[in-house]
Length: 259
Image 1: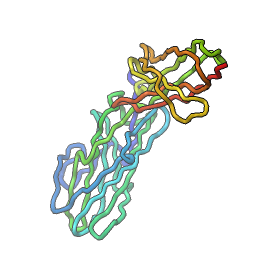
Image 2: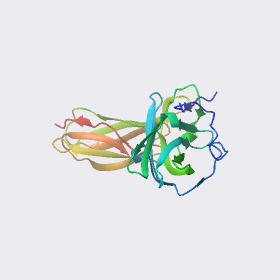
Image 3: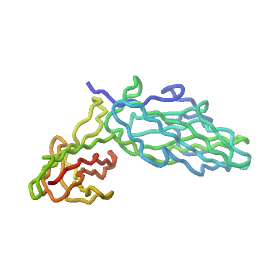
């Protein structure tokens, strides 16, 4: 049985309210009436929305629009990924603040809950999503966009490291192990991220800067293993640069006392 990451929707749920155009938000194409414009749309501060297996993740959305009569409201803010992934915020949960007589910025919050009871999705939800919206002006002009902007949804990642033996004699071999894993929304567990390049890095005891020693790849279970020669006291860590579906992550440095 496929379990899922589920999108908990703020507002009235999955049923879509008919818009002024006569189409549902899910079916609408770009359009509108009058000289109203959408000037700027920002999702989650411009950063990807990263979702794990347990915690609810909230992503603030702001829509800035202008019309010579002023902005009346933003009726909805919707997010759609690979079908059937969807999230929605309705007008009663969107706040509009005037920047001038003609321009307002309207904000709402999309909520992503990996353990909610509604809205089923799988790991394909880690992708580029479209952010759609409908904005109305005081003179009844309106504008709607299915993809006013795009944003990424990613699978939360974890990275560990262990350097041993500790302490170690100078010139002896240090073995550095670790594991790269990421959220799996089909069983709400973390699984190893296989065949991924990960940097082994080192910083001296009194330094604040890590230097890359070598690059190794995760094995078939996401595990990492590398060896280096002990030279001086310091911290070893693994560092993963990230992919389109998975964010970058650094392991917490593991100190080795070289004697």
